[in-house]
Image (cartoon, rainbow, N blue to C red; front, top):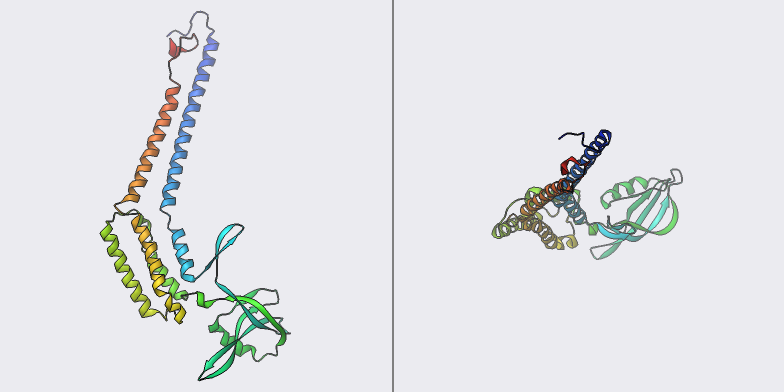
Length: 291
């Protein structure tokens, strides 16, 4: 087509071509940006649905006996505590304060008073909780000091009765649970019968593990032992919910379907943007595609 059309300035035609190229570049850039954003969103969705860290984190808090409290920022976990009245004594030289609780013990029909160190406060005001196992050794050491009696005070201390397991027990159970709560579990394909078999096997083995090692893993009181069946049920229900997501491969199928829809939508959006710029218009002397 001859660019020297009667009545048309060649400079105007060149300017028009520049504007057309600029417009098309903007359309291409916009379409590609939209496509990349959608793929990134889809990737985030897949990662979110396959995330296992949050589930394992809640399991760990549960095994530690942590309490759920509500604050301004929402719900959060904290170590289980209780209020006790304790004698407050201070070392005049080091300015370290010791919180000592008096406990009654019944032995052979007689009542005895026993002193247990529950908390230490340094001169900067930082507090350290003391476990009952460490209390005996520290009390034996500070008995050589001449401590100053300050009085009695209510203090918050760790409630060991609410912690069903020791550190060893929590670590062992988390190791077991981490092999079931996985991305591979979500993306597998299980039948209803197979899920029931897995739950039956896991429940039997967990109960046997608790029964054979209840003292070693920290279940050293009757109250803690009474929680054993309930804890097994809670762990089984969490694992079952993970396997139910893989019933018939439903989780993998849903993610695959969403990915296809997302890709199809991106392609359609790209084509739509290009097509909108190619709509045939009425003849115009400065628009060669209408000639």
